[in-house]
Every structure is written in structure tokens, then in C-alpha cells.
Image 1: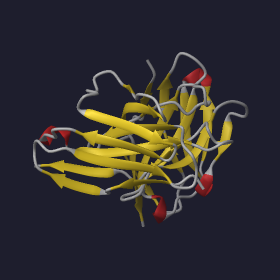
Image 2: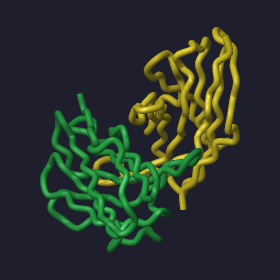
Image 3: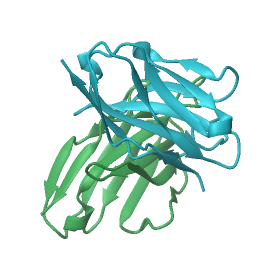
Length: 117
Length: 117
């Protein structure tokens, strides 16, 4: 149990366009989801914390107008990279706080590879 | 601010040999510590976690880790590695939140494990 999916698994877009990435908890409800960014050969960096029904909390240095996060339901959070540029190319990973009894653990999605041309 | 250091970027181990991956953390309070494994094309999988209690924790796939407060360490060990253990391993520290230790995690840079036949 506690499976998290992401869609798409990879996306290529042109500079200036917007891209939406979905994160779903498949078999449990997730009141809190997290978005991370991972550069090649680097660690995961927390971008924001997303709580269902409220505004996301962004980490210092993350542009909230560029990385729009919406958590409209208990099973879905979306990250929209607006006006994407090549420097936004990265691996984006979401996670969800576990279900009842396992809320102390985050469960991760497989990630989305974004390439901006 | 919390931080995690994984001093070994790469480690090469012969199949069947023992393994120890190092992790040192910096955190102002009692840390919530995790080890995750990342394989290509797959999401991060939780190997084990430590919140309190017995400082030697057992995880999945035969892994264990020992929390040593005096050394600010949480090293991962396995007595005998298998070729399928080749992957990227991340140590992470989390803050205690409303749901326990599942707030946004701070990750180390990871250790790439190579298994020699």
C-alpha cells in the first residue's frame, strides 16, 4: 500500500510554455504532499509543501509564481512550471505523507523528467 | 538548519561482501532519520527509519542502520550485498511535524553503490 504515481514520466517542451505535472496517491488519501527537484548526480531539494485545500508553502529561493502548486483533492497535487526555460530542466519528484498509522513516512512517486528546449 | 552529509559519492563492493554507507546529520533536536534507495526509473523506496527507541533499526532487504547520537551518525549496513543492491542511496533527516517525522525532508547528496561480480 501507499503508492504514489506521477504523470507524465517525462516531458519535453519549448521555452516559454507551461507544463503541468500530476502527483497522485493511488490507494490512500494524502492531506500533505511534497515537491522536490533533483539535478543530475545531486540530491533532492525540497521545493514546497502542499496541503489539501490551502496554499502551498514554498522553500526559500523557490519562486511561487513560477512553480504553481495546487492540491485540490486528497489524492491529487499538481505542479505547473510556468514559462519554462532551459534552466528549469530537471527531475521533479513528489511525495505524500503516508496514510493513517504511517503518517510519519513519506512515499515517493517515480519522478518526472522535464526537458525544456 | 538541518543538513545531511554522505561523505562517499561512490562505493564499490564485491557481491557477497559487507557494506556500510555513512551518513552524518546536523539537527538541533531529536532527528527523524531515513534511508531511501533510488533505482533508475523507480521512485525512492524507504529502506528504514529511526524516530526513537532502539538505536539499531532493521529495514527491508536485509538492511540495518544504527543511530549514534554522540557521533551524529546514522550509517547503513548490510552483511552481504547482492547485485540487485546496486543503486543510489540517500540518507535524509526530517523535522517533527504535526504528522510526526514526515515534514519536508533534507537529503544528503547520495551514495552510488556499485556491485562487482
